[in-house]
Image 1 (spheres, helix red, strand yellow):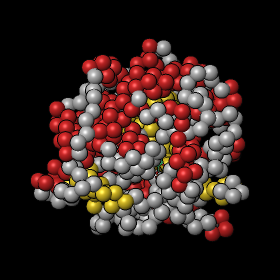
Image 2 (cartoon, protein in one colour):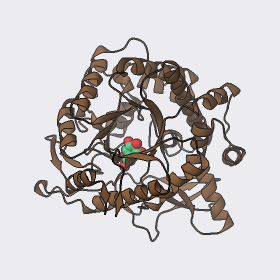
Image 3 (cartoon, helix red, strand yellow):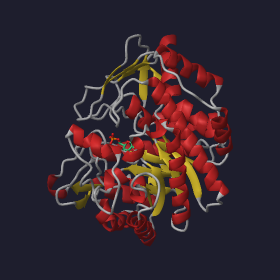
Length: 467
Ligand code: BGP
């Protein structure tokens, strides 16, 4: 049995575009996703969980089920419909009301400024590849810091720079749907890190009360076998998705080892990037001001050496066994292994979370605190007249909680856990059948139904014991 600390946060995570719905209400501006999903015609972000109207119900449920923290993102396009200019009073007011409701229900809000949803007007102009958009992001951040400083104590600049950039320029599953452009991929990651750093420096200059951090998606990469070529492939894949961003966050520069791997990947794929001295100056400055690191962790990968051209098949339907992920000059992800995996081929491997947290502690000793800001299991829940018996999800959470408790015992400073997701939400590239929530949502009626996992989570939060 493991005991989690008394002040541990047992939270639930959401994101504006996946929860709010109401994409055309309150003078909200369009985001690139609106057009991308309309063009695909598979599903839309309306109604999502109708959190825009239903947040009092979700926060009441949170309080009832022992959830004492919530990740919420501000939709940039509600505050600035075109990304900058005059703020939209309805959008500004909506978040005041939402944050006040969180406090009324004793649920601590952790606020993300960017969760995949750049306003369309800026996204069209190359999103974060365009340096002007870095400044627009910083101006938006400044507005939020000043406007909400009395209601928000925990700020997150970006959610998951690797998945945004790789979705946009590598797998093509995010707008603008570009595939295998390694130059744009790495440039976008770097530019978003510069935007993060500028916002963090500003946060400190403004003497904003509260704490600020960033959320990275950190999956551990293991070599498929002990061979030297598989080890090299795992290293390259790790640098691309993890180490590049961790270096930028906590060192404020890219180590020689990191740049050697990035250079190799770019050379093989005819890509190039530009990193200015002034970028490194601001990264260095910000690297000491990160109050916490958010780790989103769902799975780990096992990487095999691969010599061919890049090939990706995204399993966005839950058709188990269909995933393909092979990157030229990097390696190939192996899925068919003796490790349990979800219908979306995500390998369930809690050891990877433990290993990642210990790695952060060892390699980036200035990290201060960690929150697991997302972890959870996508599952095709069976509604069964409102008795949702989601045992696999309970097992999944329990095993990851054990990994966290073990990391704490081994000296990692982990202060909380946010289950993805608080209630069922819309999934970017999977739509509505991939459910993660503690609370089941009937997306037609918008009724909420606590799942078995919600009762289990409540007990966990009460006893703080992981058995
Ligand atoms: C993370 C995102 C979330 C959420 C989650 C589950 O990458 O931060 O927004 O979507 O993954 O992913 P998916 O919905 O693809 O299953």
